[in-house]
Length: 334
Image 1: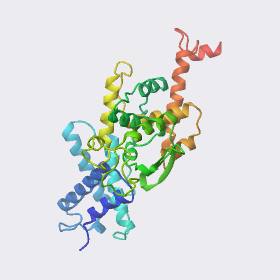
Image 2: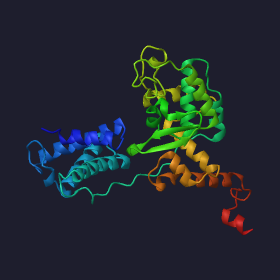
Image 3: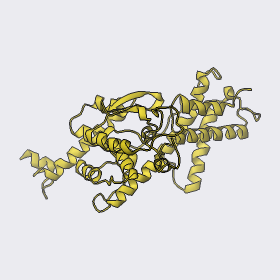
């Protein structure tokens, strides 16, 4: 007997889509909720397993309506568009998986629109603040050298935190100053590494403990960044987790709260990388390639940020833009 369909679907997400563990859990949760609803509703029978070929778009609309009403009842507030979009995406992806594997003829979720997500400006640090932050990282102990290398690489190459945590020793080339990254959908890209990050990585690798019992004799398959137990020699071959990277970043920010005075996530380091490149005149297509975005429209959000930044600078600096009692139109007319 084959694996249950949900197990096969989550395996597909992890293996072929290279989805994060958090995404896999979230999508599985939504599909299991749909299964329970269909059994209770009687839309696809009450037997195990659900007959997915009987599911219609009307069934899905009732399901989503109940989900959104339940969320509103729990909090008293309307469900966030991002949350609603994730629920629709999970179901649509699952049913698309069934179509691709010949288990149903058509995807009934195709015609169900997902709510539009509000466009939020990405968080980032200005160049001078980022330079001050990274330039004052402690790097005396082995742990501090590792932490500095992690933060320098996040900013230098714009990696997703999950990509950074999955790096192996073989992926970093100090000779070519590049890092080989496996991104979403198992797509591989090679990204430049800046001089400061290369030096920080060199200092870390010079004192990184040798791998014991690793996946290969030469250690090239070992994680590039070991967790705390790994770097102190209590364990071998264990890579650092995204949660630990976020904690490291916050600890270093808190140590300089007087200078930084703001919160920044690992994804904020990635935003800073892209925004600073754009402000320096880098080509949008090149930024797309380095970030590993499948669509240029995803990268173009940084262009919007850049324009808003320029407008704000104009309004603060131009003598006629904000003069009391003079509108911009009057100022330009003179």
